[in-house]
Image (cartoon, rainbow, N blue to C red):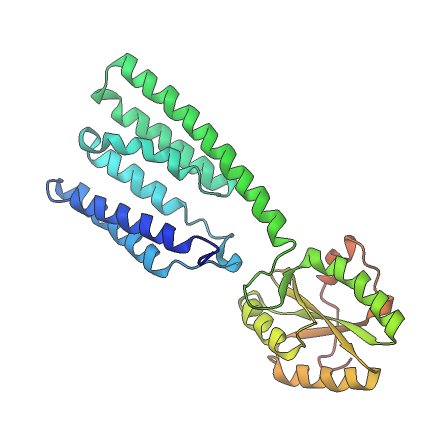
Length: 284
């Protein structure tokens, strides 16, 4: 498969939608034309900048923008843009946070009220019932995608090409690496790195560069990273630790735990997120 994440197909669809809206603008009133061009610009820029990454797949309520633009287009010219009300079903297929979905549901209901004068009562009721059924199906599909993506993040790399994994993977890997250390006489340490939120991804990439290919880096939460460091002896681990400390920013905190002393339980992740008081950077 040439494009695993179907980015090229999605980009084509976005560009086609932008072109369709652009062809709709010449006869539009000024206020509607402005919103149409804003919609065209948003679709065009999104298509150009589109790229797959688990890093950007959640946490940003960008679904508010297309919802607001759709409501604006219908509100400025309901007699001309009433057909766009069916686009709400497509919008609800996008995974979104609950408060964003609540906003879009309210905007969809308002859109139905705005187009009501353009239709007879039976036609309007039929439209509302049909649209409601489509939106419920779309929301159900979006919830399936949310659950599926959550499961994927627990077992796949967060950034393609880097050994950066979700924190849930750490619980499984610790038990495996403890078994390896006991069987092969390898010395292992768990390094917990506390950073500021804006440093998380740059520090994660740096940790991936400083560790071996068989050593993974884990994102515990938005301000905590961890990595398993395996060496032939404690002295070699100490040397690698000093090199890592010198290569990372000065305002981070590093906590080193001997791997065999760590209990691989689900509650361990919450414990690791607690920044140690008075932890001295640079001390293994």
